[in-house]
Image 1 (cartoon, rainbow, N blue to C red):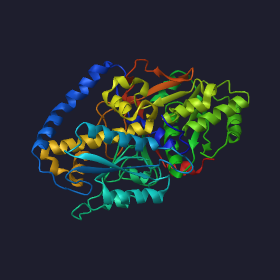
Image 2: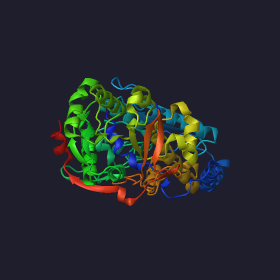
Image 3: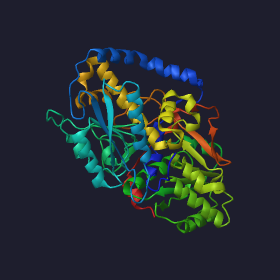
Image 4: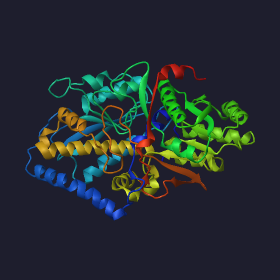
Length: 471
């Protein structure tokens, strides 16, 4: 896990439900059996691909595909001025993935090359990244650009023959509402809204598993929801989440907006509201820094003794949260939609990611980038197994990805479609900071998650109107 998420993590926190493993009541395999399961699932395709490669006369088949290489491009907000290192983990993951597959024979009988583009939380750079990918890469893989409103290039990018079929974008997450329902966009996180994109009142799907669990362990919970206020999109996603949590029994005393530039003293009035209301939950829908500053300011003001649940999205699942928060973030609950890195041995694909990137560089968002690369790998292998290595084109890749209606990243995710919305999994687990470490608290069995269908609920709202009323 890497550096702090200084802004806009709320966009991702409510979408983290896309990641899931096996149900809370399922058997937890040993490391060896997990590896065997992955091998068994892919052995047939791998053998077919190897046979295809043995006698192939390789050709340049599309943009980014030569007789010897496949070029993909990862675009992420890696080093924006206001948040250095924000999604560097995505770039690290895709580079590690390419290195891994190249040492194991490559893809489509070719080596995988990676181009990187830093979108810097800048819509112009996000647009330029699409243009660069269109010109040089077969596909975008592992995308995580929070501000990506203009997807014209994704929709109209020409292939090698000049046909404007579009550019495949296999994203770690699609945070910008304009990207979420893109015709050539495939999201590992999934999409809570209904596609195609519409304005005004809409129906949204949200994972409220943590809210249900918290409410069952603390009757009559009421408190503060800290809304990530860095952009209209972050605000709208926060609105969706707090309204969905409200639907299952948590009352909000206040829903203040917080930003990446807020200092600790900016949290003083929020602490005072929580004290005046006797709040029993403080839920951070923003980032790890916001939670650290809220907790530090609460302690500086004498504490909030009524709070039973200090809770956070997986944006707080960072080494920086532990290091910067210290003893003051003890007891914080963090809900997640994927198996924690501490349990990588329970899923072979997660173990592959941890080994390839290295334990010191594992990253929550990078993990989703790796999952996007797995989708790319599976689609390419399916194309080659069916039609040979010279069938690798953007058109065939788009077709293969569209057909992935039950993608699970080799068991790391709950089954879900990659395209369109709503496309969320109901799975979640809860970690807690205990003695300076992340410790699983629910479900208690390692390698499992709560995947009850009841964890998903819907709300119907004009999020823009509600968001505009927040202070």
